[in-house]
Amino acid sequence: MNKKTIEKEMLYKLYIGEQMSMSEIAKELNISKATVQRKLKKFEIPIRDISEAKKGRSNGQEGTLRKDLDKEAIIEAYNDMTSMRQLCIDFDVSYKTLRKYFEIWGVEIRPHDVQTTYHNKVYKTGKNYRPRQAPTHEVPKKRKKNYGAQNKNYHHIYHRVAFSTYPHECCVCGYNEFTEILEVHHIDGDRSNNEPENLRIICPNCHRALTKGLIELKDKVQV
Image (cartoon, rainbow, N blue to C red; front, side, top):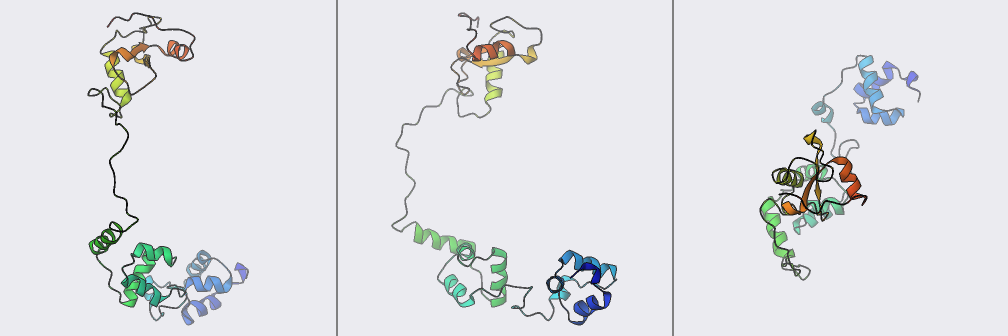
């Protein structure tokens, strides 16, 4: 139905007289719910609040709760210690809706620790349970403090180590005018290996050329 044909009398009859919800009116008139709300405000028809709108509506009435859920099957599965999360998956229902149904049906929800205790008792003693095992491969030893791969702040480590060890100048061309643009090069390419002998201070231009293999490092660097 065209939105221009919606009259105040018809909307008042559906919303006030027949106590239809905005969603039901939108479905009846083939318009959006937002259009219904906008028309109600335009015609100055008082809009019901949520609590008032739910009065007198049965639990199975369309627009409140779903009608396709099997109450007996859900309660039976829950009494068999099926978790609410698994029920949501099996019956294709949201957790919020399931809790709402349980409240209406008078089903008492188990405490979380009871469900967890049952889960651990069943699944951690079953044939499919595989306890966590120690790694069979050899675990590499950690490097010295602040030099090893166990520390994630690589940039702060190798920058501090290099600039506290070597002169603040490029080890290739000797550039030292603006030291804040100088970079740190890892000789073996491993950014977690921040031993002083693996680091060199270098300018950006020489760093790119060195990475591409166009130049080589000097043999001796004063430490």
